[in-house]
Image (cartoon, rainbow, N blue to C red; front, side, top):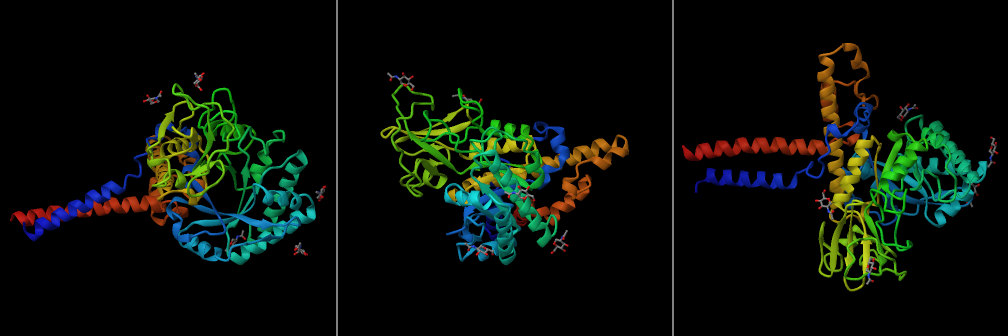
Length: 482
Ligand SMILES: *[C@@H]1O[C@H](CO)[C@@H](O)[C@H](O)[C@H]1NC(C)=O
Ligand SMILES: *[C@@H]1O[C@H](CO)[C@@H](O)[C@H](O)[C@H]1NC(C)=O
Ligand SMILES: *[C@@H]1O[C@H](CO)[C@@H](O)[C@H](O)[C@H]1NC(C)=O
Ligand SMILES: *[C@@H]1O[C@H](CO)[C@@H](O)[C@H](O)[C@H]1NC(C)=O
Ligand SMILES: *[C@@H]1O[C@H](CO)[C@@H](O)[C@H](O)[C@H]1NC(C)=O
């Protein structure tokens, strides 16, 4: 074997390795035909956002898969009853700077479940404390060079608190505008999962004023079922569980849209965790819907969160439940449910049921986000991922959005070439950043519009490398045979 043959073999081996690691569209079969024309024309797919939550304390910038995010949300700043907010962690500046180097924006979140939102309720209850909260957050944004703020008030308990939340957001918006200029900072709020309502105990109100006020509503489309339910059922079903209308990803999205929330401002939540229950089972049960025994379920082996197993727990090599993303470890059986489009696990000895999301179910949800023309996806939470397996789905999702959008621009450009030219003015405009010609789209991609195209650029780079190495291999083979 001469040197040139060796080089050819080496190059072919490298190519195979590249091919094996880069299959960005493998999970996503969704195509331009699956997406309604108005979504293709809206431009939303060019600016699809991915928000990822992580706790402010203990955050490690090296462990964040930056390519899979557009926005990192730090949860949660402390807020006292008078609206004074404080940062707890001493290490967030490094994370914020690293995020910015990776073209990812960083928001600070206030509220959350428990005490955070109890204090939020007080802080939002008077005009003076609303203004104090807004001023306090504005100061922190300025000090840390943050890109915005997320109000996560869980949950308004009556109509007055819904109105206070609106007033608080209004105060926050005007504080941001006057300090940083209109459009320079992002304001988001979380949305309760069910029935298009701001909390479990409040009636549905017109959501349009909120949708007009904030940049995005982050829908907490999970925690539908768990150890608190009478039957075992998925944490986040895609479609409704029979007998439980409204408690699913698709129903929640429809409900918020019919409550008046704008689709291009709706971000749908994806859980990187499942929920558990100890079920009453027998050898004949083939359905995931089983009576809940009421016994306290075990927390996950790593995170030890009561009633929940994160993807880290599920994939733990020694004490987890999955040896591969869709393969059960010994003692567990892994099933797929076609009614809710989610996987579920059952432990044969302890009768532990886990209803969760994996790469397959997250892909189905992401496809639905694309087809519905929503603003994007939100992840609770980034550190729950195992070896970036779920982040890879988010990256494929991003790439699908740009692929479909690019195809749409091309097909629209082709169809407008052969028809009247007047229409080209209202083609796809990518939120004003593009004017609808595919040439502009390509140059925009090269410049990396809002950082989203970095994954596509990596893929294109790999393709180019692949072509280059083919040429080198051919040349070497040719020389070695001379
Ligand atoms: C909250 O902030 C306000 C204004 O900065 C200040 O007057 C007040 O003393 C603070 N309250 C507490 C409890 O720290
Ligand atoms: C806040 O001020 C407005 C008028 O600016 C008033 O109508 C409203 O009742 C006040 N709200 C609270 C909670 O004090
Ligand atoms: C947004 O921020 C930039 C950079 O600081 C500034 O130049 C611009 O004027 C701001 N926009 C508005 C509307 O104030
Ligand atoms: C076995 O479980 C199924 C489903 O939970 C239930 O319908 C059935 O009655 C059970 N059979 C026995 C013998 O307990
Ligand atoms: C679920 O649907 C898939 C795809 O249509 C099919 O291959 C599979 O057999 C179905 N499984 C069940 C249990 O119905």
